[in-house]
Image 1 (cartoon, rainbow, N blue to C red):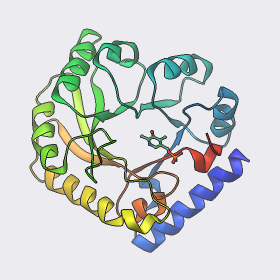
Image 2 (cartoon, rainbow, N blue to C red):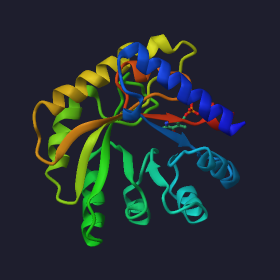
Image 3 (tube, rainbow, N blue to C red):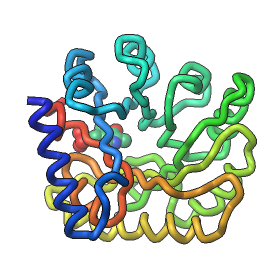
Image 4 (cartoon, rainbow, N blue to C red):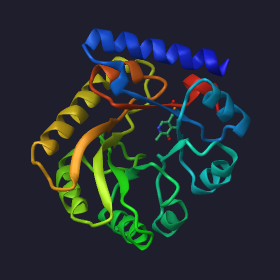
Length: 226
Ligand SMILES: *Cc1c(COP(=O)(O)O)cnc(C)c1O
């Protein structure tokens, strides 16, 4: 079932790319495997998935040694500063950086290990109370400040759009994210290149792809309900 689900997501991504005049190779399909057993992750791996997203540090640490070395792990959940040290050398990218203080901690721990860590700045694009992330207005100045830190590289932005039955409702938010990414990119901030736009989940990834997502994070649509 997992393989079929992945094939379906890939097919829909291709359709959206065709509609939008994009190349599907530009888009990374991340399997969001939080709460799922390693057996399921292995099935996804067998079906070609190499990017996995987790939102809890402990779960991430438990799963890493049980999966092949070429998996790229993405931290997509809220990250506490005191836990940065556990994952810093194990993740390909941290998608959920929402404060200068967190970024400073990441840079500090990365420097200790001679690493440069790729991060995204999380934007609360719909201004929802329940969500983490900076406002669209704050994003640019946070990127500028974070980009000055020595041991990390800002690669772009991440957003979690509102939960909705109708993905079209999120189109304006995805458009706003794309514009924000381009606007910040045009400032040519040293050490920040704004090439990654992480947005779109099971319910709305087709619209996100049409609007410029380069990384979609799909959980339920691959593994079934949590
Ligand atoms: C859980 C989660 C997802 C995946 O959600 P689905 O609706 O199951 O696809 C994507 N991004 C983040 C940040 C998540 O926490």
